[in-house]
Image 1 (cartoon, rainbow, N blue to C red):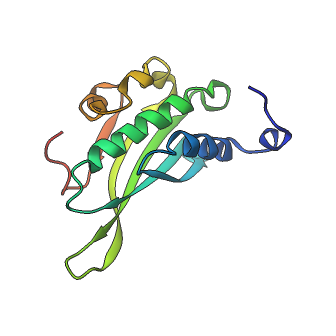
Image 2: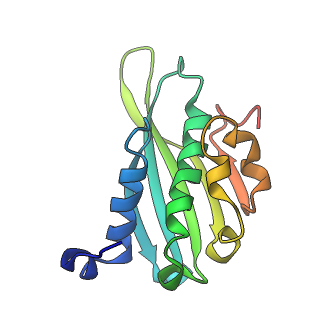
Image 3: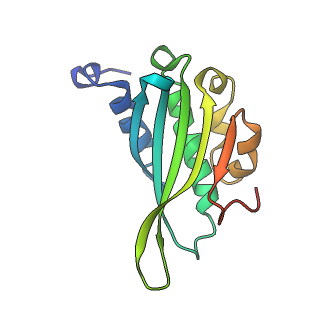
Length: 150
């Protein structure tokens, strides 16, 4: 892989944002940001998807995005060793009146060093949702409307 001069001057946050964006290109979930918080030595990655009550695959889409992003993240051991990786998910929810608001629906965390020992590609695609709790994540939080079932 050739690294351009532009990429050499980019921060790890910008590089991860670009690479995860490309990896999620065919997904309905989009990355909204990547931030590094020095005080907690963590990278926080935000995702967003439109949330419609008629959308039964919301949880599976969010989990599949985490697995896709993590398969990208583990390619950066020099920059991320020893850090925590936190994933958050937000969705635009519409009420019966047609009003929309942004709602936090998901959060999970994994130590980068633990993530190195998981074959993330095997979790991509349908069925990844069932594996989330068993793949070395420290916790999984879902919005109360979505928490039943996993």
